[in-house]
Amino acid sequence: MQQFDLHELSDDLIVDLIADGDTDAFAVMTHRYGSQMRMVALRYTGCVTDADDVVQEALVTAWQKISSLHDGEALRSWLLRITARKAIDLVRQRKTSYQLDDTDPGQSEALTARSRPDDQVLASASAAEVERILNQLPPQLAQCWTLRHGADMTYAQIAKELGTTTTTVRGRLARARQLLMEQMEGWR
Amino acid sequence: MSDCAIPLSDLIDYYDDQQGSYRGHYPARMRRLEAHIPDCQRCQEALRGLARVDKLSRSYFEGDSQSDAWYDSIIAATAVESWPGRSVPLEVPGVSAYQTEGALRAFIRRTVSNRDVLVTRSRFDGDITQPHAQVRITVNIAVRYGATIPTLIESVRDRVWEVISSETDLELTAVDIDVRDIITPAATGGSGEVAQLVNRRKVSNG
Image 1 (cartoon, each protein chain N blue to C red):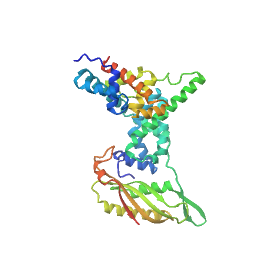
Image 2: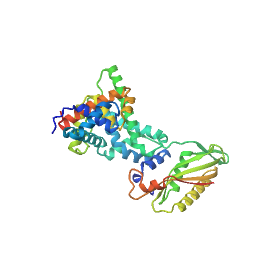
Image 3: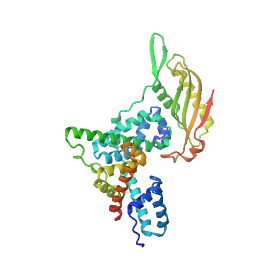
Image 4: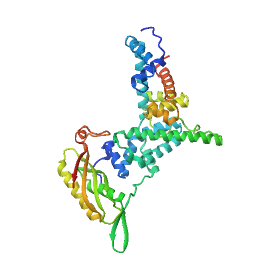
């Protein structure tokens, strides 16, 4: 049916096709950005199962709302923002249910992105290093860092999503950056 | 090396200010640092370190691609289906029949696209839920680099006309064609540069 390889099309065209109801184009979009969406979700929720749920929900929302995206070139950051929002919601809900039933969801599962048996070997020592340090950061700092560098959100966007101020976000990011600098660059 | 004692936190503020992520909050301190940094190797090295940390973080999040099985399962889990859209009535004596707008769009994508043209989207303007409604159709297309665009546009228009008159009872008043992109062999991910030149050439046929 397709004479063109959808994988070679620009985001702009992929968005157009999805808005027209093309499920093959939707699969291409998922292949293009699913990995980064998953990293953001995983890093934010700290749980493999939750991360996949977040990505799945984000993709469904994207499918439903893609007609509202007027600039196809903004597809990547749009998807990452939806993912971040879903992850934030999920962690919020988890906190509520945690208080209710007093269990500790998520924590028993692996916190590292690459710990599943079917995952490939580490891409590079540097990525492993970033992961190791993020694992050691207080969750609030690691989450802010994820929104900033994983989901490409601005300080104002992060503040809005977390219901806090840009000053607080700036503080958390500065602290995270300082810890990363100390550990990765040996800076004191 | 200088014996500068500027704390890293100040340099982080400076770095944020330079990056535009948190600009204009400490003007006096920024001016002092601006004067100091060009002569200070330690501060320059710290700023390079901050940039390295950011770069590594970004590539960490970009991550490796996931396994094929993961993509397959996540796509299956979303269970997305083409939305039906409006119901377009069909005149069949004695039977109440209709087809969905979604099916019609899919049909246009499939049958009008060929080696040189890819239909990406179509829009039906008019109340297509009424029998024999007048409709104006806008079709977005991408064309292969090197193809003769005016000829292609003619053939797309003819083909859309053919599809609508054979598959529906709608009365087609016009087909507008919007050339969204030129697909170059090397085009990947973002929009091709050639495409920018001719992007969104709009052709109307009344």
